[in-house]
Length: 359
Image (cartoon, rainbow, N blue to C red; front, side, top):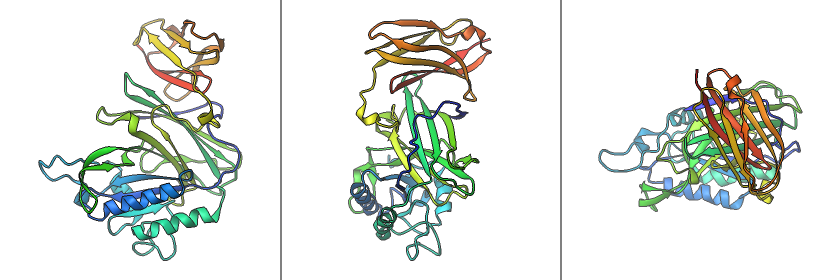
């Protein structure tokens, strides 16, 4: 299940400084595609050459190449999104890939398709990096994982460092690495390691429309997604990118771990604050309480959000002392019946809990 929530929070994830465009690779592959292991190697070569400026997703879009044969035990990586992405690409054979959803002169697989044969992928990547163009948008992303409910809370920001003449679209993809299973072709086998496998698209294939693209504008959106039990959240990543409203011409992209990842400035250099939180009772009729403790002194903010992303309550904001249990009344007895999200931030650490208020 995917639930989109509008967010009214202040900007904190996306940089306001212009940044160079990054490479977003959308590779079309299949477990019965003989040349696809070589395609995977070519994607890896780009990721290794531009480790800070490239990202990829592997899309299993074809029944011919991705539908497991009966009783084979082979993995089924098809999604509800693959067919639409394949149609958008204009591919005529596998493996194929779109890089930044651009048409590169002389490299199209057929006609003027965005899809290219694997021998052109590196040349297109070199061209994107060689152009040294700033993206008109910066993307901020943060994920919060709830182990007990397997809900993934995704916060996205898009900040415009330069104005765009028309509308854009935000796309978010959930992908998984290190999946062991059958792969045909040279270099394949029963114990092949599949990486960057597309699992879901929380924004849908059309993406989230961004209407205000003027310089200095900020678009925010929050999603919740329930991760199936058979997917290993430790091996999952979120990839976000922005295209034109036509779903072509990708501006740039970012990726983060699906389990409590963030693009917040300097996040890699900051030691996260250990934060323990619980809400009880939950579900609740009447008053519910939040208990939390931090491993070090920190500034803590607690917010209760409704399903359209509005902050309906802010029961706590201020400094706390390390290793001390705090218990606060969430004010749920003043809320209408429904689903809410309790968001607790301590320094750069964010945890989000689902709260159900009953009649």
